[in-house]
Image 1 (tube, rainbow, N blue to C red):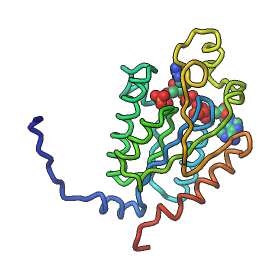
Image 2 (cartoon, rainbow, N blue to C red):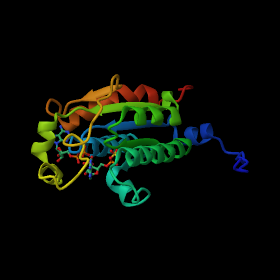
Image 3 (cartoon, helix red, strand yellow):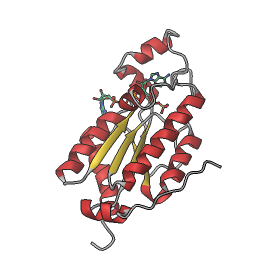
Length: 199
Ligand SMILES: Nc1ncnc2c1ncn2[C@@H]1O[C@H](COP(=O)(O)OS(=O)(=O)O)[C@@H](OP(=O)(O)O)[C@H]1O
Ligand SMILES: Nc1ncnc2c1ncn2[C@@H]1O[C@H](COP(=O)(O)OP(=O)(O)O)[C@@H](O)[C@H]1O
């Protein structure tokens, strides 16, 4: 028994959502390092901001440098990383925001838990399905080169697994779609879902 009693605050999630004139959603980007998660999330946030939506991006670099700076890339720590991010996302949804979360999140069970934490109707899974060979060619941060030389252990796609989503809401292959086209495809899917029911 934790002896914790939840206090019920007066302003509700619905009121916060109405003030922002949007239905909160979690847009969960998953894919290999260098697949394009952050680039697309950034361009999507720009497009949503132009449409006066209230958004926030959570991504690996910020979270792993702050909140989760005690975690490694072992399977166990990745699960804990994703669990904490799911809890943060839940708070942000409660605040009425559209949350764009960009994490490798290589394990199916961890992504399933995110969906349960925030409730499935609030969760949109976007699989940035860029082939490994392309991610490695880009090697934005030089990490694939290091991983191939054996300097990084547990590197996703090289010596740690990536479990592709089975039925993502949206799949983007960045070798076939430009950033702009990817944003258009995501917007087309989410815009009806962002509307409040009484609109
Ligand atoms: N071992 C290993 N495997 C995968 N990625 C690694 C690793 N070590 C460091 N990095 C860098 O950390 C970013 C991934 O962090 P995430 O928090 O998204 O990973 S995870 O969801 O917990 O699997 C990832 O950033 P992105 O390139 O933005 O995906 C990498 O740059
Ligand atoms: N169609 C595309 N969509 C997204 N990124 C692309 C695309 N084409 C090329 N890129 C490049 O691929 C890289 C993706 O890096 P990044 O967004 O940091 O990936 P991730 O966040 O998945 O690690 C960037 O340098 C980006 O400019």
